[in-house]
Image (cartoon, rainbow, N blue to C red; front, side, top):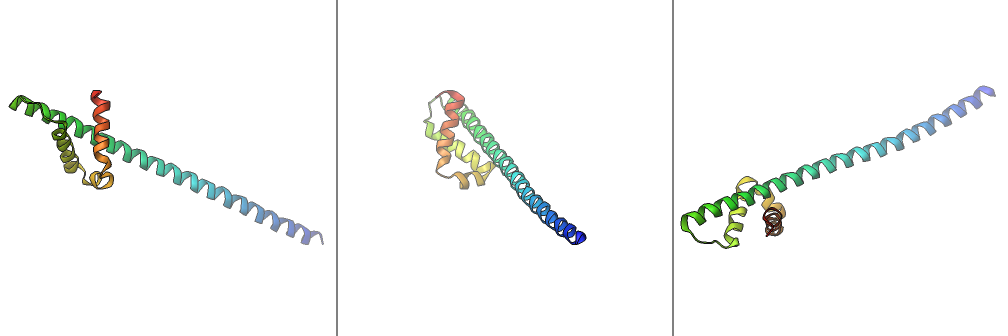
Length: 116
């Protein structure tokens, strides 16, 4: 009788421990997956910000060169075209991914960079 009771208690404890380990494993998997997603998003966001920043700097550089050559002020739309063409040359995925928002993102970056 004593061994049967002990065996039942042992089996119940093993089921309980297995259940607890399963729950801990599920939480750990979710935690790791979330960390990886956050890292991917952060990397993608930094990459896009660098590309847009480089595009704005490139457009400003081209604008200064053209202004010196022709001694005229260019409209901001011309600089925007330069920035768009730079981004298209560097990473076409950014253009396809952000599409209509890209102009707003470039304008935001110009405002941050030059206080316009």
